[in-house]
Amino acid sequence: MRERPGAGKGEAMSGLLALLDDVASLAKVAAASVDDVAGQAAKAGAKAAGAVIDDAAVTPKYLTGFDASRELPIVWRIARGSLVNKLVFLLPAGLALSAFAPWLIPPLLMLGGAYLCFEGAEKVAHALGFGHDHGGPDGSHETADPAHLEEQKVAGAIKTDFILSAEIMTIALAAIPPSNIWMEGATLAVVAIGITVAVYGAVALIVKADDMGLFMASNGLLGLTRAFGRGIVRMMPRFMWLLTVVGTAAMLWVGGSIIVHGLDQLGWPQVYDWVHHVAKNVAAGAGDWKGAVQWVVTATLDGLFGLALGVVLIPIGTKVIAPVWALLSQLNPITRVE
Image (tube, rainbow, N blue to C red):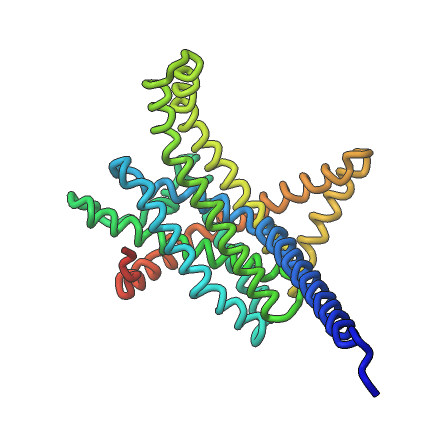
């Protein structure tokens, strides 16, 4: 029997339509996966707010004493080292923990929370005139050679970033819902890249704000422009102070919250239950503001707990851990970043 004219074309068209339908379905699945990754990354990044703000507050200290022309190249070098820290070292380590030793994540998360409490409490003690704040440059002896000094400061910044990045990635990993390794890896990669771009983009803007203000004050065509430039120059010291205060409060809040929740997960719910009970009672009469008041009270109590724990940890950190870390850093210096 002869084949009906156009039948082959009809079958080909049906096959093409079926193929396009499959492609569209795959595209929808891919889009949903990308949307899931973005949503999970946003939530995980928000959980790491304390470490992120601390990272942005600490980094500008490494740029003091350099010519303005070297500020952005140094920021770029530190940002590149931060990406290496997160993507090359910490992301694979986090995925390995999630796959083979998930029971280690809560203790490591609590260790990071304890470090946040320690650092936040040390900043508070320093502001009150006690002790010293270790959150700036690595304390190495400065040299008259600007190139060598830059190498020292960049290496010190990358070392500090590794600690903060470890906290960020551990907090992010704990915030990701259980899923396959590819989804977790993609989410952590988005968190790593997004936070690095946000932190060091903000640092670049902060360190160049003075120069921009001076340029506007000196070269502005309008009086309003020149006045705005002078305002930027006067505002930056206050802004840096505010950033430090907010960063310290965020560290104590996030660190305290991590420890309180960790203790609850490990079978010691007393502190968590007490914080929840107090926050619920205080917010009981707040009406429409009940949720906001409960959150503020909870965050405040978590922060106070973090401050108390940090005060206890200060002598341990400064007398024991810091000297050991300094010794290990001298024995294993970070490879030079060009």
